[in-house]
Length: 74
Image (cartoon, rainbow, N blue to C red; front, top):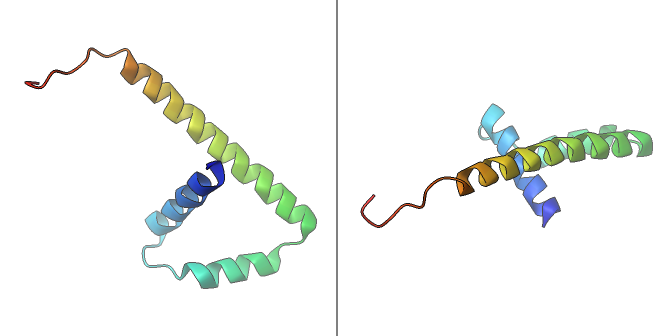
């Protein structure tokens, strides 16, 4: 599940920066630049970004749980 969330997170970043990008061509270009050490390095870098964002979302969720419950009339 985390891998799927990561894919959507990074696709959203790409789409936000360059709407309508040709994702397949971009992936082919970047994959062609990777060797094993660079792949591992990028994997660690991306994992750190995802971990940070997951922690941020968890903190927001915890904060929202402390809010009073909303009733049907609010």
